[in-house]
Length: 198
Image (cartoon, rainbow, N blue to C red):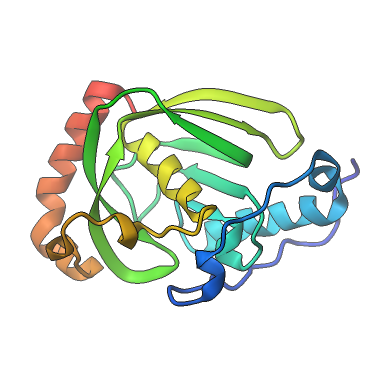
């Protein structure tokens, strides 16, 4: 397909309370995926994620309820402790747990500004999806990165991380997280990365 000439658009990110975030996103057909409109939208989704310094962004977060997510972790100032994830676009993803082992992680979300809370995630998941060109993806993801994939795919079923916070007492602003919880959490995160490599 010829490259699209126009620059990507930065899209508005829906905020908690917007009903679109509580929908179940619909599957995308291969024909729809390969069309210019969806390819342009994926460019916009990636650009919006990067502009907001997100580790990922689901289509539903920009008010497009289709089963597409973008994930990328580089040198992210919001999550300096996260292992790098190259740009990955998942279409119609299915996540399958690979273990019963779990870990607790402080999560935040571009759709829930200035709030973090502790969520329990599965340590390893199998990810099956299409990439943006309709090619099959089938990979295993472990550790903190597995949590990132679970968080983003939750959006496709209308779930936010606040729904999974096991103890409301862990909810905090970014400022209070940095002041009271960050140091201890980073030690836990580093131990998880050392054990699982992700």
